[in-house]
Amino acid sequence: FLFLKGTTPRPRLVVGLPAPPSLPAWTMARLSVAVALALVGLVSADVYMHNPRGSNDRNCERNANRNNGNRLFDSQNNAAGGYACPRAVGDDDTQAEDGSAGIAAVGGETPTKKIYYYEDSMLPIEWTNQHGCGNNSKANCEIVLQYMCEDTADPYIDDFWPYAPVKAESPGVQAFRSGDNIAAPRDGIPNSDDDAATDTIPDTEDAARPDSTGDRRYGMHESYDFYQLCQHTERNKGLYTADQRVRRNDQRGTRQNPNGN
Image (cartoon, rainbow, N blue to C red):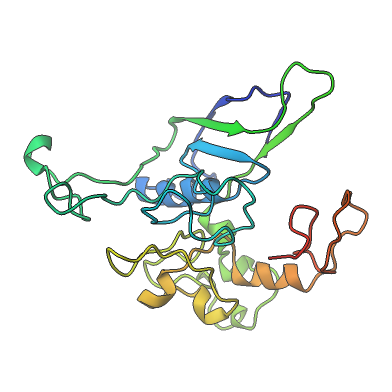
């Protein structure tokens, strides 16, 4: 956790990206998925991520407002906030979906729309928090930045928790990864140019495994088993709920999300 208190309305933080001590050095591609995707979606309470780009539950919409405020998490932020996936807007003469238009302008190489983060580089983190913060004795805010790696979101079965039947059957592999397709965190891959891929993932083990184009459409930020544990564990009823009537007894119900969507 990185913990900030008394921030300004447009704070900027710079953090390093060291290689994990127990794992091989991360590749650029793995950093782009494991760090960026873990950061972009897991923000709430009217906080808007700018760098890395925050989704605010968007995926590949071309419209001004997002399609689904419960795609990855219960976002109660303004629907016009967030950054969509870096797909082309316009016809093929402007820029094709694969980025092939304008090749001559970049020395004959195909442009990429991916963001890469390099091991040991410094990553500026920028966000906007909409509500009061700063040098005012009547305003107080505490901002926690969370980030997560692929082997935490989808643990190797040797280290798997909670226990799963496959633990004894397939040690040394991730529980939900399918070949080169990362299970979590993943943002969802559209099936076509007209597909925004913004549907909420079904609560099934089959959908959690990205072993088909249909399943890869869904975004997923944590292991399916983690979510099962969450919805079968009683919530902490000692937490402050203000005037909200929390309608669930499990951990999905919170003050900000009383219906546990």
